[in-house]
Length: 214
Ligand code: BG6
Ligand code: MG
Image (cartoon, rainbow, N blue to C red; front, side, top):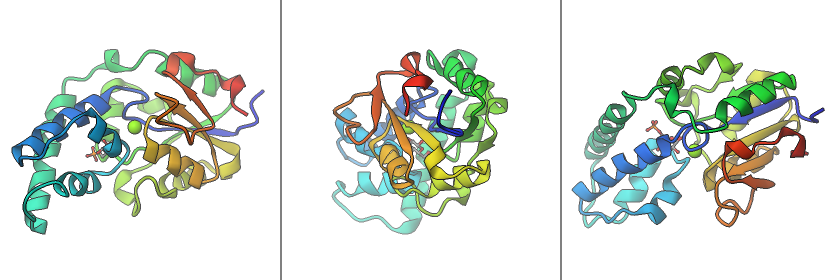
């Protein structure tokens, strides 16, 4: 019996490996502007929305960019990203993802999705799991991205549960900060040293154990 009434999942890097596709698309974009881009820098971009990520990349560029240029670069990255996700199928679900969702459902929890990606609906659709969620936040309605708590609080409100009755599942430092700022229990997915602010860290969803989250 879980003390929680709802679980709110992140998408990219938790349920499917789109974090890899974001990385590849940002790397190509950054290098086209002469900005060095590697896995370590990418770690800071995980969970950060599109324009916020672009600003972080362009902070290392040798010149300044107008708003119109920034919009064009963000669109270019997104077009590349959309090409990368176009071929996704249910086989791109990460191991343990469906079992974790089904365990939460079997325990009577409501299930939400809190991704700042404006492509989240497309990715869920390609993975064939849209119907497994009671509520999916539309990233276009969020004013402040992660690490602000807005997106997790909105998911809780729409699921009609209080934040203290929710736990969030995240692979990003910014995402774990967002969950904790929302007053929720945080399950980190990845490296415990990177996700030190989480209440518990598991390497991937094959290790998801609902009964251990208190
Ligand atoms: C987050 C990813 O889920 O969505 C970030 O972790 C990404 O890497 C962000 O930049 C925004 O995604 P999109 O699809 O709206 O550009
Ligand atoms: Mg993520």
